[in-house]
Length: 139
Image (cartoon, rainbow, N blue to C red; front, side, top):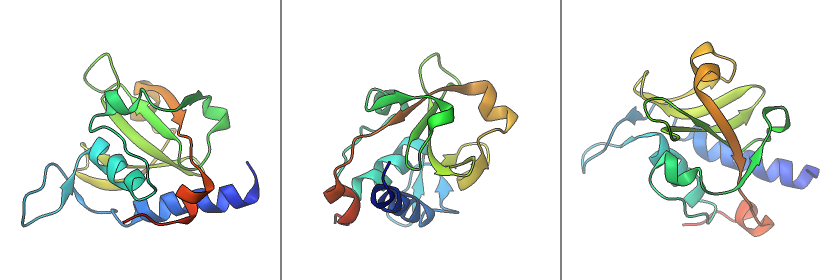
């Protein structure tokens, strides 16, 4: 990845960080809440990418990547209670994921090597971005 794309992909994490501490769950008019796939859906929507509303459906997008080749902004899929992907997180770099954690009930960072996630990891996917998606904030 060239340096400009790397810098641009860091904008994904900047957007994701705006959600740190947001409660896990489904919101109503008076409160903001999100689940894992709603979190990734909202973050990537800011960059013009429309993702479906479940981890299983989101896992059908992009191309598979090896863990050793992860780049900031890649999606990681986990098996938590189904045979298909039931949890999704965004790779934040430096061995960290950012996600809406059911266990902690909020959006947070976690270590990719944490036993819980290592045991449940299925695969990672890289979504296709144009430079326009990454450099222009969508409303």
